[in-house]
Image 1: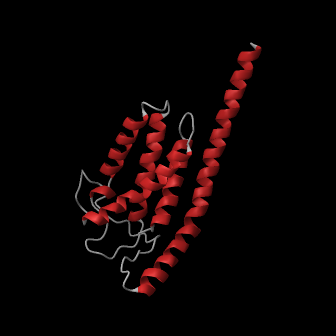
Image 2: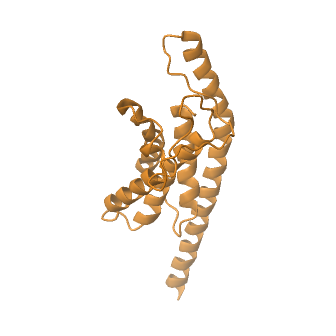
Image 3: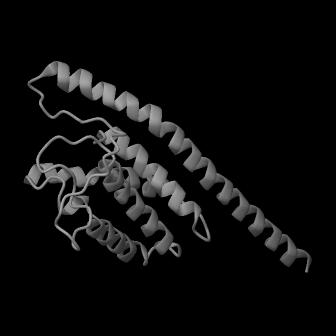
Length: 187
């Protein structure tokens, strides 16, 4: 399962790709910061002892999207698109954890909660296991640094592609707005 670094990069990539599909692609620094934070947030369930359950599910993704939309709808005309980007950032955590190595019983996530309480895994061990055993310095430090390095190799290119797609859509929209302004000014 990815480290917080991997989850943050994945959340940013998901936000860029989701927002690129919006009619008016637009992301702000606060929305990007929230995207990174929300992509890490499901792991806060470690503190309650319910790790890999409700917070790691499509139900939680839907809740995040609804809460984001209800907060943003009074402030932004693009509230739906921004809420979708935030929900996608959160959802990237679930997808990445499904593609991570997991050896703790029960293995997997309750990814389909509230429809199912069963644990699921893809079997694709794209991401290594993260050690929380701080009393084993070699495993905790070296192992987690290696996992973070692998995530950087995989996810920085993904993030750059996502940003490029989003940037291209943003530039297209600005050109279209410029053409409309010119047409109004001359017409």
